[in-house]
Length: 468
Image: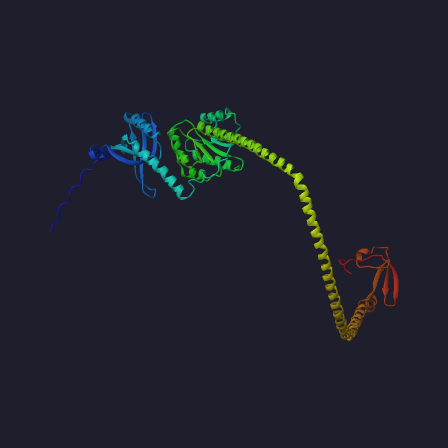
């Protein structure tokens, strides 16, 4: 059986033709036009008249599961960005979740992308509010959401640690208002960055430095006035919120405008909308304290006057009663002393009688017990004396033997015994020579032998290293 002839291979197409075919299919597909899509903005920058970015989607584990490049052409750019910032109060920026109207676009040279033609700001507003609620709920579960609010604010807070941007208009307004208040404050600036990516670490560092002197400060003030509303994103941060909630000093915040709300506004001990509102709160606290002090001073003066009048009346009444009361009181005390004297005499006689009887009883007991004790001690001595004599004799015998042993050892170790064993002793000026180094030519020495001694003059000597 013959095999059928093999079909001829189709003519290969160019890559351009292939990509153009893909582009035609995608660009002409009505289902990929003006689709509303939820995505996270992973990158965004305006170059020239157009804006370019990247949209991503992440799963529950935080892994990116989809990604596409996106473009806003100049014809829609100003309209979309203005619409978003007016509604949200912030500019479009990295990390935001957005609801976008997308149209798929495919170019043979640049590949697949998505054109952004519209945006729904209400979705982003909802997502931002959701993030705030999640942070607050987390702090509530940790039991610290009201921790800073529970710290007692001093009645007259004057020593103020200020976290703000050095040279910022809000900080200047705050200080001017304190200076012109007529009260004395002791503010100290801890400079920090209050906008951009450095906001959170900068504020955390300032709080760390402030709490090193926590016993000194009455309160901490975090103020930021003016500026772009988009810079408030940093204040919706779980790490910063937790750190401020656990701060051991009451925290007052004034970090936005009247219509702005951040997580820190809910965590702080006291929330004021602007730096000048924070200054007004502090000034009012001192004014209230001053008023309360004046009221208490007035009350003390009035109370003192009232008590002084009452006491003067009481003293006058007592003074009038003294002439009538004194003789009666003196007679009463005299009768009391007479009764006490009679009682004391009888009690003394009774006490002496009892003491005498007790003493006689003690003397009788001592006489009876001493005779028995003496007899017992005499018997014990009679038993001990023979034992003492025997022990003394045994001890003397032992000591005599010990002395004899020592005498024998002395004889064995004496110089005389050494000489008798064939040794001699050499002396210089009556002292024994123990080393040849003491013998120099011309030295006179005395040599002791068992039967006498001889004198000699040293002419030479050999040390231990010189052969004999």
